[in-house]
Amino acid sequence: MATLVRDWWTDSNAGYGLLLAPLAVWLAWRAGLAPDRAPNVWLGTALLALAVLLRYLGGLAAEQFTLRFSMVVAAAGLAVFAWGTVQVRRWWLPLTLFALSIPLPVVVTNTLALPLQLKASAIGAALLEWRQVPVRLAGNIIQLPGRQLFVTEACSGLRSLTALLSLGVLLGGISLRTWVGRALLVAVAIPVAIVVNAIRVFLTGFLVYFADPKLGEGFIHLTEGWLLFIAAFALLGCLAWAAGLVESRLVPRRSNA
Image (cartoon, rainbow, N blue to C red; front, side):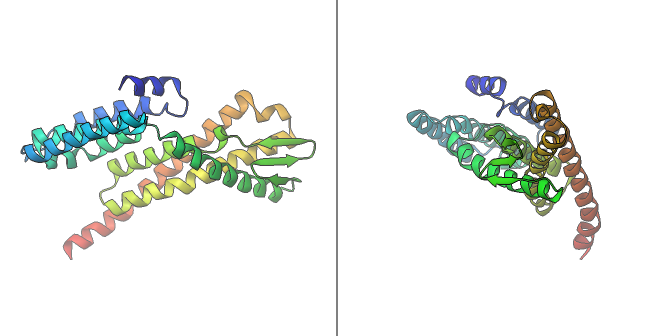
C-alpha cells in the first residue's frame, strides 16, 4: 500500500488513484452494511488464502500489479468472512474503483500506448486534411510545412482512457440500474477517449500551422488537454443521463411483463 500511494503521488500516469481510492472508501461507508448480511467463513478464508498466494507469487516475480491486486482480493475476502457475499455485492462499486486505482503493468501500458498513438495521429491528420492543412503522416509523426508534430506516449490518450473508463464505471454505478446499461456506458468511454485525444492532436496542429509553433507545447498545450477532458467528462455524463432515461422507461415495462 505504501508503494502504491507513492506511485499515486509521484507518477503522473497513476495520479487518478489519489481520487479513486478515497472515493471508494467513501462509497463503501455510504453504502453501509447489508441488512441481510451473514458471515461465510469458508469462502472468506478461501479468498484470503488466494490473496496471500497472489501476494507471494507477485513477490517472487517482482510484479507490482499482482502484489497490489492481492489487496483487493483480501478486502473482498474479509468482507465475505465477516458479512458474506451479499456485502461484496453491496460494495461492488467501491471494490471496482479500488481495483481501477491500481496502475496497470508496464507491459500492458507499453502494448496499449503505441496503437493509441497511431490512432490519434491518423485521426488528427485526417482532421487537418479536412481543414485544408497540407499534412503527411509517418507513423506517429505529423509532417506540416516547415514543422512536425510528434505524438508522444504522453499524448497517446492512455491517461484519459483510464480516467474515462473509471468515470464510466462510477457514473454507471451511481446513475444506472441495469448491468447492460453500465457495460454500454463503459464501452462508450473507449471511443470517446480516442476521439477526444485525436481532436487534441488536430487542435495542436491547427494552432501550430495557423498561429504560432509555441502553442503546441507548454501551458497552452496542457490547458487544451484539460479542457478537452472536461468536454469528454460532460459528454459521458450526458450519455449516462440519457441511458438513465431509457432505463426508466424500459425497466418498469419489463418488470410488469
